[in-house]
Length: 277
Image 1 (cartoon, helix red, strand yellow):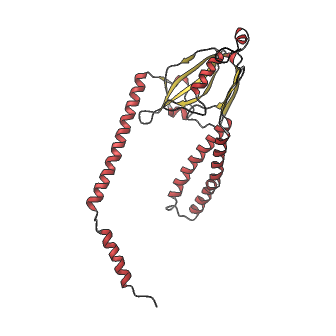
Image 2 (cartoon, rainbow, N blue to C red):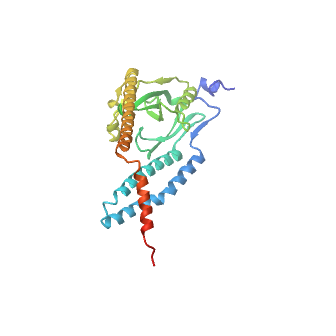
Image 3 (tube, rainbow, N blue to C red):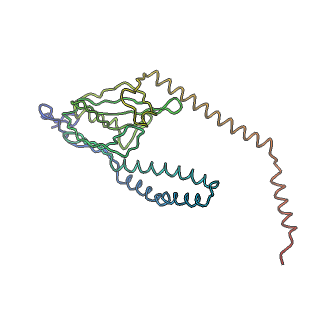
């Protein structure tokens, strides 16, 4: 008979906890098939883009190639996104087993390409705490608030379970649910760490570490969101003003009867054209 939380009573007295029903979090087969199909479907078109660019540049038609270059850049970003998502769906996996947790998660932090993965198997008895904290990336123009969940072993090693947006939840890896289950299995409390602001520029260059984090308070987060809302309202107002100005200029300088006169001129020209013999 097991106690609430799935931990056996006998296992709590001596030895590591034993979970009666292991839980596995990973992508389903349908998601993997759809991503693989989309990637393979677009791959021939993506491979043909360098050939098309070379042919145009070899003929010296640089002026007519800028549109194709922009298309190639956008296509490359789409293919990279599909590649990252496909690898993530295939390799990402978290299993809360009977006596421990098995991880296969991206080795990089949020914002880094998810090509390298870290695998680990940690017994519940070796876990000292499960921690979560909010990490802020970017400035007031485009701030990104991410929630990180990590576990800390008794030897001091830290293993990140992943990131999830503060404004949304990931149904594939619900980190909040995983953290709560992990805490019940280990018999520990979920520790809420202070929020930090991470330097995005140094992070992408691989120079950021824990010492570069700047602690933030709830007031700072509120001020950051307020500045972001003001910026977005100003941007929307600017776009609306430009659209309104364009419509006004078009009506003030345009001629309503121009299309009618052009149509009449075309009809007269067709009528005046003698038939070919």
